Figure 1 (cartoon, helix red, strand yellow):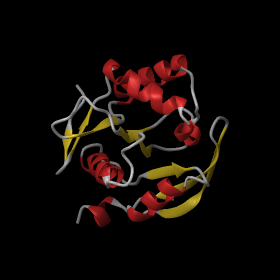
Figure 2 (cartoon, rainbow, N blue to C red):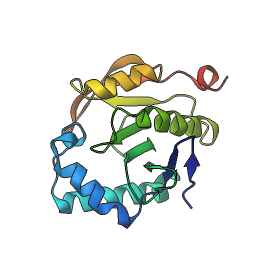
Figure 3 (spheres, rainbow, N blue to C red):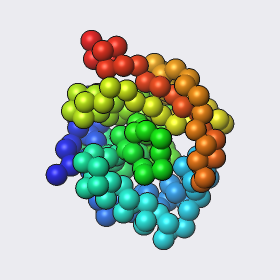
Length: 172
């Protein structure tokens, strides 16, 4: 069962088939250029299946970001994941159109990182950021991350590795 996480304003819930249209709209847009898009509806369906299946395959995964009280409306995706071709587990985030500039990504990423550190016992976390993704770069820095090299992926190209502060630093 996928846990639900709560913060002051947000509910992070498991992905479900009902999220397909929101995910397909995001992945069809230019906003998806940093995460392998734009994508067709068929590719978006595969992506959603991967989000759901990751929980079974790894025992953890990414959540759908929603406002508390409005859990049916997806605002984005956040959480720990570890695709088979990644060099190490990552804390990833994506916000859908209309959700930026409200502090949702920061709040959701901190909640997800705390979960990874406290529940999954991660001793470190990274986030992979495309070099020209200035908003994600700013968020990584706001989360206290520091640069830690690069990673080249066959689909996503070269990404900058941003290392999160240790559990001792953020959970103290």
